[in-house]
Image (cartoon, rainbow over all chains, first blue to last red; front, side, top):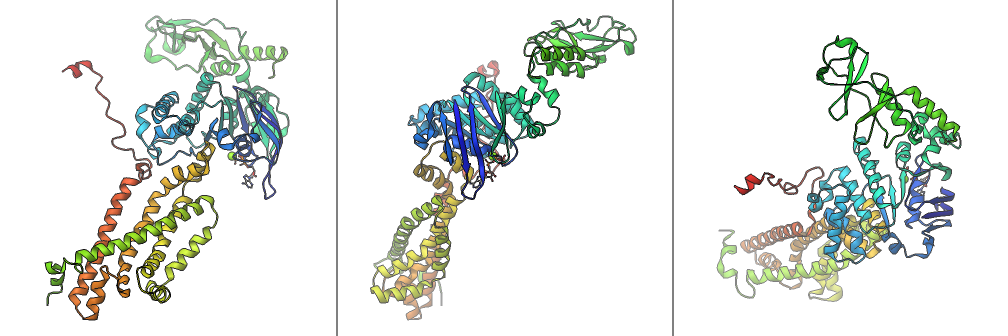
Length: 363
Length: 239
Ligand SMILES: Nc1ncnc2c1ncn2[C@@H]1O[C@H](COP(=O)(O)OP(=O)(O)OP(=O)(O)O)[C@@H](O)[C@H]1O
Ligand SMILES: [Mg+2]
């Protein structure tokens, strides 16, 4: 757990970067700091590992005031990942990852073995171990940065815009990877970004800062999207927040309707839209009975379906998107194995939303 | 007459005043000078670069010292401390310090701030940051500074002969005194050759000492970095 108690940072030139910050980042949780450029996110983060000293107030990590700790010792127990990766150009990847274990006095063999383990954990093949940072792509370098931060298994991880220098596709996969890692490792993570979508996706709780280093709102992402504290947060959270907020509403209790299915080669029903499935009842696409003219279902005639609504990990957003993106207007609901369970319509989703609101969900 | 005959006459190579002995003396002056210059300039440059304090000293002193005429300095020093090794040595050290100091300072200064930030953020102390991160990354520029110092010292060590010492300068000065041009030419050629050979040796040393990671061109993958996949077909392996 990381606790900010009335923390203020004023730089010698008079800039107030952080203004009386009170905040608790929960143990084993991802806490995201988000806000416009210059609002004090990096400064707040760097005060946790004493890269910056607060002007006043105190910061507690797991109950201990960090001001009483030796800075170098403190930092060895806190993973630190930065945007530019900061990998040592003169050291191989495996030695980069082994840095903190070596500082802690592990012998070289054990530190390297641990480093290779970590590389696999973050999805890097061991063949990369002997390369140098300049020989890796930007996305690979960030993975190395994460592996290096985790090498000595610190309980706390600080990440300052770690994924903002890579392209959107790589960024998405790095984010997914971080969530997977976190579900295994359960670190206390503080993650800085200026991208509200990234904040909402990764954060168990999100702290929105405004310029001048003032905390504007600190809430779970669903609450942030549905109940912004003020106009600033509202405008920062941005467009489509109603739609995006559906991500945080559970689809439990959403009724799943019937759907007529057919297999390839069977005679095509004359109904307008029929769902075509394979032997395992997995959806292949939609069959348009009107334009096919009554012949058997041909694999080449299928109209691609929309997104699938996985009832196992379902949110109303996934259900609504399935309905809206399906050519038939009915979203396809599937189970964990991808087998068709039935279909849902957009109006079902809206009704479920209304029910959730009546039941008091923050939507 | 044959200008190069002197150089290739075996009689001029041996003996206490022969070419071989002068070569060794010349190398000795150079090595001693470099040792002292490195012992002064690398720690000073590293500390200034690391702490960020006193950078103006480096720039100012480097330019100031570079402008000093070495020969004039030598004559002046000879006046103060008399004839002997000390005078030329001091003059040569003053000549050698600026390039090494500037190279070390620039090398340490130019290390990517994000790399230093990460090093500190992971819990390295100042000494470790300097020794394990900043200096290894500064090495190409440090060795570059040493190479240019070596070139200057080898060519300037000829002045030792002015104050009755040895080295390859003897051939030039003695040759001049008696208008023995072949001897002067031999001296000049030997100095030039020595400089070239020394630079080649240092270039080799640079290859050995500098991490391959600092030579790697971004975006270009090492050809041997990824081994070719081993054949997965057991039949092929059995064959
Ligand atoms: N060393 C410093 N000296 C003076 N002012 C500083 C210093 N470091 C940061 N600041 C100022 O403090 C404020 C907060 O900076 P900080 O780096 O924390 O912002 P940030 O939220 O991380 O912004 P960004 O999204 O651009 O990274 C800014 O106004 C910045 O100019
Ligand atoms: Mg920042």
